[in-house]
Amino acid sequence: MASIEHVAVEAADPTAAESFYSTVFGLDSEVRPRLSEAPTTGFRGFTLSLVVPQPATVNGFINAALDAGATTLKPAAKSLWGYGGAVRAPDGTICTVASSTKKDTGPASREIDEIVLQLGVADVAASKRFYVERGFAVAKSYGRKYVQFAEPASPIKLALYKHRDLAKVAGVSPDGSGSHRLVLGSDAGPFTDPDGFTWEATAP
Image 1: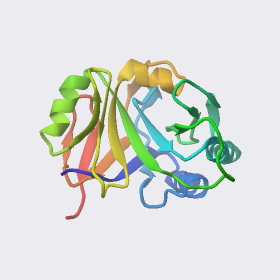
Image 2: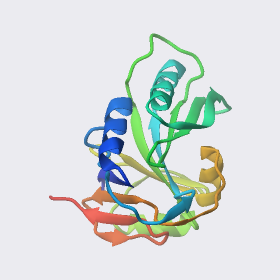
Image 3: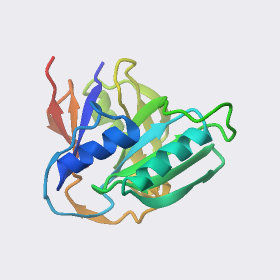
């Protein structure tokens, strides 16, 4: 079963980006910034999403991100599905933090239940087939709207969202061009998917 080992966020200042993800979210090995000045504008087509236990934890992570230079895209708030918000990291990556519960059950912590990399794609069904053919196992599937893959040993889960719908969730315009500024490290790589997301092979 295929899995994601890490994501390489491409940034003009990888040292600053590495400090941001480590200090704010504690993502030392999962997110590995690297140098890139490839042209990119608008929505890059993906979000790095953290699923956490409760609203207090959401607020703690988002406040820490803002203190470290991130900007607000969606203020943390209650919704039909829970509680969450979205920020843009200093390197341009969109990060969402959410909880499925709307009430706190204890003091805030830095616990993360899941890290989910959500890719915005043109055709969810076609991309689902593409990834299944490369060894990814489907955990959740909602028609042509959303798919999440699962590998228990993987630190990062992969999900596919309709491009426009993912931009709406993130609170940004769906328009964008140029590089995704993202490379995914996996035992399934190397390849480039139908939407131009690049994967590289990791050591066995």
